[in-house]
Length: 131
Image (tube, rainbow, N blue to C red; front, side, top):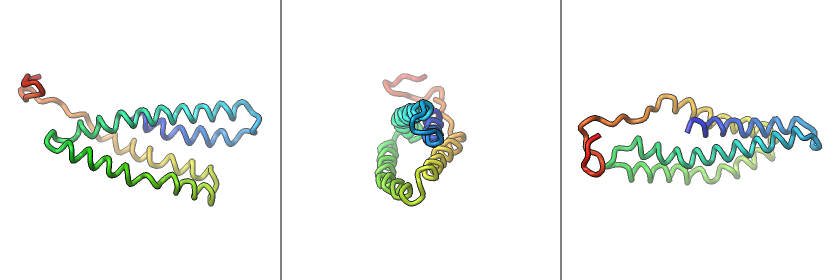
């Protein structure tokens, strides 16, 4: 999840750097490719990591509640690309790309305090075995 958060921060930065070069420059194309690679890493990492993190942090009896809440919050974020498009139209693309760095940076800082749950010896796990 941390690698995905870093990739989320690097994608808009790479795209902003691409805008600094002339349209005919190979460096512009290279930074655009780097931006899309970072986006791919971010989406893949977040897709796999968020579900695992939610299930890992939730108590087993409340796992459906945690998953439902995570999906509800994700659903509330659906209109944000439209808001981003409107901001890009009013402010320009470069300020919006710099604003895109803030959420993953905040998430990366917040995730620093989250630790993986440690299995307790003697506790039953699936299949009735103890670790």
